[in-house]
Every structure is written in C-alpha cells, then in structure tokens.
Figure 1 (tube, rainbow over the protein chains, first blue to last red):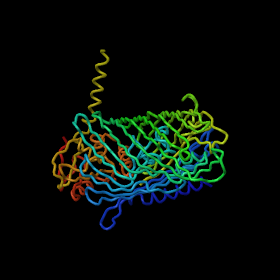
Figure 2: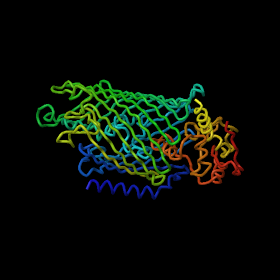
Figure 3: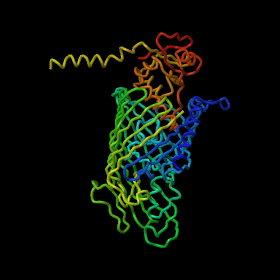
Figure 4: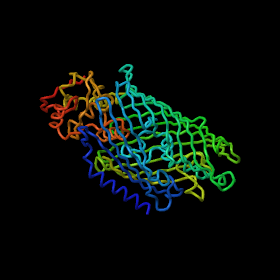
Length: 415
Length: 140
C-alpha cells in the first residue's frame, strides 16, 4: 500500500511536471517569474539489515519519494527574491511533512560583496546545499559518511543572513569565493536524530538554536580544480516529551524533556577536479558535539570522522557511471550508567565502510534513472546507536549484521 | 628515451588541438547597451557561470543556445563543461535559489534577435552568422 502511494504520487508529479516542462516562465504584473520543480522516486533493497528506516531486506521498499518546487523573480538588476517548498518521505523520515526549503532576498552589491537574507541553504562542503537535488548527481545516494540522509536537517539551512562574493587577489592565483553566515537553525522533528531518540522514550517536538559559519573555496589556476574549507558552529536546544520508563526505569508517564548542546561544530575540507567528462571529488568531515541530555542529568559527546573519494565519468550524452568509497567512524561517551562503546573503531558498531558503484542514464534532458550498489562493512549502530547513519534498532529488532549489500534505484524529473 | 620524444610530441599536439579546432568557430555578441568591446576569457566564463553579472559597469545577462556546433564549441572553448554538466550546474543554483536559469534559445538567428533586443544580453553564435543590431566582443 505504501509503495502504491509513493508510486502514485511520483507518477502524478511526473505527469504534471512533463505537462509544464516548457512553461517555466510566467508574467505576473509585468514581471517575469521563473518556476522550476523536481521529483524523484527511489527503491531500496538490502540483503540483510534493514536500512534507512525502511524494511528493505525483504522485497525492498519504495518509501523513498521527494519533490520540490520554486518560484523566483528579479525585482531589479541587483535584487532577486524567491522561495522553494520541499517534501520527502523516506521510510520513517520526512513523513510527507512539507517544509519551506528556502525563501530569501538576494542583493548583489558587487561581485565581491553580496547579501542574502531569509531562509537560506547553508554552504558547507561541496554538496550540503544541493544534497536533495538528485538530478544534479550521478549517485542515487551521496557518500553517506559525509552526507548522511538521516542527518540532512542538522546542517541543511538557516534563517538569517549570508555575506558572500568572489574575488581574485592575483589572476595567476585563480579565484576565491567566500560565504559567511549567521542565524538560527530550525531542524525537522522528522529527521534521523529525533527518530533515533525514540528508542530511549524521547519524543522531540522542537529543535532549534543559533548557528554561524563560513566557507572559503579556491578555484585554482589549474583548469577545473577547486579546493575549499567550511566550518559551522551550532547551539541546539531540543525539547519534547520523555517516557522515563523506557530508558531509566521510572514511571510509565510522559514528562517534559529538554537537551542542549554545550558545543557542536562541523568542519569540512574538500577538493574537486573536473576535466572534460571526468569529475573527481574528495571530502573530509569532522563532526563534534557535546550535549547535556535527559533534562541535564547526563552528558553525551559524539564525534565522527568521515571522508570519501569519488569519481564519475560521462561516457556520452545519455550514460554516466561512477563510484565512491565512503569511510565513516564514530566515537562517543555517555555518562549514564551502563553506556559503553566498543573499544576499537574496527568493531562494526563504530564504523561504516561503504564501497559504491553507480550508473545513470538520462532518458532526456529532464528525466533520468539511476542504479547503484552499496557494499557496506559495519553499521555504526550495534545495540546502542548514538548517531543516525542509516541503521536503527527499531527496524532491526533481531539485531544488526556486520555486513550489508544494498541496491538503490532512483528515477526523477525536473523542469 | 628515444621512444619518449615522439610520444611527448603527440601529447603536445593533442593538448593544443582543441584550441586549433575551435578557434574562430564561435563569436561572442552583446547588446549595444554593454559598454565593453572586448572581454577576457575569465570574465566570459564568470558571466556564463553566473559568478558575475556586470561587465565594465553594465549589467549583463547570458543567453545560450540549446544545442548545435556553436554551443558545443563555446562550452568546450570557454566554459570547460559538457552540456550535461553545465545543465546540472545551473540546476544546482536554481534549486538552491542562488540564480535563475539563463535563457536557452534554439538557433543562431534566435540568439542574435534576442541579444539585439534585450538590454545587457550577452550570447554566442557561429562565426559566420550575420549579427546586425549587436556588437561583437573580442575575446582576449
């Protein structure tokens, strides 16, 4: 029934999308408004563990749908405004709750100094702001160690302002682009972290807090080469309800709950090289957080190291293939009684090493299909997961196996 | 070492070939409102990759062809991107709100007509296309 609903929604979106494929501009009060949209439908099958909050290990699951639509217009040569809505359903994540993806005004003073204000996609690494845009990638799932789809909300956007620009100190040195930002983050309560907390009887109802950060990227004088670094600092407060009987052995009632970060940051370093039909990317992400949890009773620290190299080659107008190796390890400490992580990162409960091969076919310039294989060692979860990374006890009640082979198919349209 | 010389020569010829193959096959045109008469290849790239929207103090908007030899030559010569990767690049900007999709037109004649009639428009056409009503920019 769920697969049927996803398929129907996607089919409807494809039909509507293709009908208006060439109607991207409308005139409203003598002003040209551009409208664009995208939709994708995925299917995931695994040989063993259930993955990405879905029951993937039987026939597989098609609860993997998303779509977005935007409108924008130029008010003057310097000022542009626009907004986009986005909705997704990925197993227990998203759950068809539409969100305002971005909505802002963008004022270009000079190429080296511009400003945008509103709800803005956060620039962090190569793909944080474009991670939902399946149509621009060869991969059906980006390297999950760095761009975990469960944790997309944690860094995706902020409500505030960006200063950004491009400049060249010396033409022989290439060009630099920068973004600095500040504001508040409002994270979805339908993301991987709130879902993970439910195993402890915690039900998050609100997640937000101030954030600031920046990105500096260097277009090297070598044609097609780019390198950069990003930093983001968050101060998140989560509130909701707690059933103490689940994790602490207290009464079976609901009481107010809060948790708060004492320190939380993400650092990312990246490089990209494009030559002709070849594209090579590599990134490293360090995530760290220090949280007071259970209404201030305990402290939890979680750190992750993730990196990947990826390559993609377009054979011709229709066909592209690629692959990546995603390396993810975590370490954590929780001061609650009986909480211990495995001693070594080589334990499957502390890492995921994912080898991926992928192929994409462009059926026309607006419609594509992808298929990819994941060969994963580790689940970074075990019996007591601390970081949302695709594997959860809720959908694996019999426990997790150390290895998983996954097949992901995805098709999408955009206009 | 003897075998290395011819290989190096062949590699050098191959490396230079794209410039020879495409030089002069495409010309860059602009609306008469655009104040400059020449443009560096770096600035041209910045305009078409939406990094910059001004040339010599004039507001500019790029216009592209949907396909064809001039389009292929321009992409290879000045942008260093395939058609598909350029579209993906534009989509990544459009769906994050960072830019609007540039206009794509179906022929050299359509580009010339659009550039002639649109303030700030910058486009490209095959070198032998008549471009009355526009100015041709020398690419440095």
